[in-house]
Length: 233
Ligand SMILES: Nc1ncnc2c1ncn2[C@@H]1O[C@H](COP(=O)(O)OP(=O)(O)OP(=O)(O)O)[C@@H](O)[C@H]1O
Ligand SMILES: [Mg+2]
Image 1 (cartoon, helix red, strand yellow):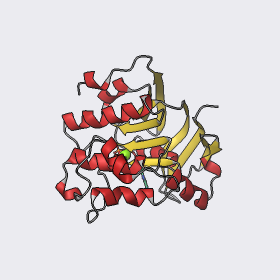
Image 2 (tube, rainbow, N blue to C red):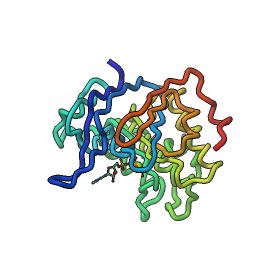
Image 3 (cartoon, rainbow, N blue to C red):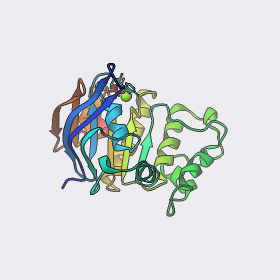
Image 4 (cartoon, protein in one colour):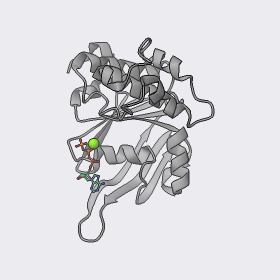
């Protein structure tokens, strides 16, 4: 079985007469250590899928396997534990706590798991040496996003889920973040899933999953993804 495998996975929002099918009969596979880009227009169902993979929500029908466990069978408690320990989540707008320093923001995450990385060295690993005592408002967008990535990484998740991680960043900073995410797959064997509506980012992926109208339109494997340094967008 693949590291991640969705089998006829459905997610519908709402009840009664007003319902929206956000994920319709999704089936796909992702192998461990891949950098995956999920592409699709606004409303295509990308964040819905990422939330399912992150244990924030549960599929209505079908199976969603991650590392040998079917998330569709999880109880609320199982999902809580899974969110805390098994996945890292990076949001478009960082979601840092404004009145905590960079270091304290990362420490919030390290307190959740038994064998977390050292918060300070995780900040250093994302290039934020010397910035640990800054508050989010004293950091640039790219620096804040790196704190958010450090916060996700400090729990040592094998799976990192990123929703528009470069959406709020300028070109140069965005490329730095993409380089960091690529490094995590190539050098550390982690699986990274990036959701974006920016089609150019597909070039750097090992696997591209194209979504449209709540469905998967295509899955493409790329033998030789473009190195991030050569990406233009
Ligand atoms: N909590 C919710 N309640 C009701 N409908 C929702 C909810 N979340 C998402 N939807 C609907 O589900 C569909 C898919 O939404 P989703 O957020 O997954 O899209 P997306 O591809 O991430 O879009 P974007 O690129 O704009 O972030 C949309 O029609 C949206 O309105
Ligand atoms: Mg979204």
